[in-house]
Image 1: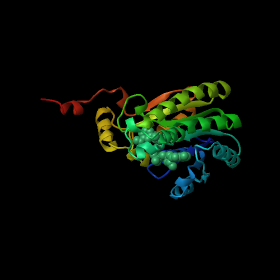
Image 2: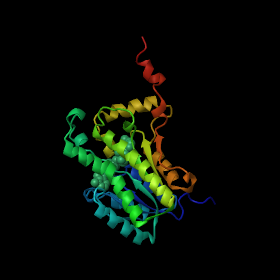
Image 3: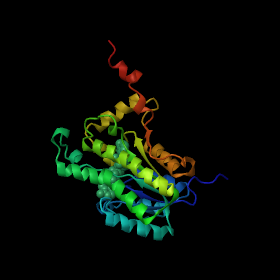
Image 4: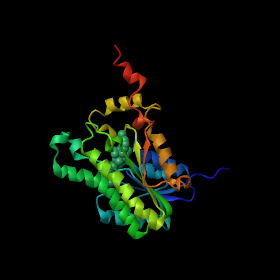
Length: 270
Ligand code: NAI
């Protein structure tokens, strides 16, 4: 019988809020592929109670951690290493939040305290996680770290506001940390730029529904679903992608390289 893709591997998954979450789908897929996982989310997200349902399905422990707090992240890695009995092999950063987006402040009139919060939660948290793991030597050689990004890091998209800047920083952190982690430990660090997906974070963005359909029309393969995103993440965690690092990998059905489509152009025919 074929070996499961993540058999014998252990990992930490940040950001499973409910069954729509990209992290939720990834946890299920990683579990199916034989991985032992530890789940984590912000203490406030715990109160929604859903993560415990996922933990039960996956036989996983849940450790609360605010991803902006280095103390929480240190505690998380210490406890996770106790639970799995050593270092981990993979980490998923599936975290994003912008108070400016939530309050619908225009990009030209952002609240800068909120802007700092956006960057801290959605980008700097990735550096905090990587730095903590690096200092604690918490990831096995040839391990894999993935964070989720969005095309608004490269192309301007009205409505995404300061999250666009946060994603640009997130992708840059993957390249910068990927260099050092690769040199020292052969650990891979990549971001996946995912299609618009109907999740809590996704649907919080103004104009999300129209953009979801627009992207679906432009992408030759259509939008990538949350389930296919989970498949891609699991593949990046696996040994099949051992030489891939410091990349921003588009998982968007071809949207990022398609300028238009027959369907969209049909709207302009005279
Ligand atoms: P989601 O709302 O299910 O997940 C976002 C997660 O971030 C939640 O679990 C939330 O509790 C967590 N979070 C927020 N603040 C936190 C903090 N201080 N500490 C720890 N965790 C915190 O939504 P989704 O869509 O699954 O988002 C996951 C990632 O995918 C995000 O980085 C998002 O930007 C990215 N993404 C989403 C797309 C979409 O259209 N839904 C498209 C491309 C990327």
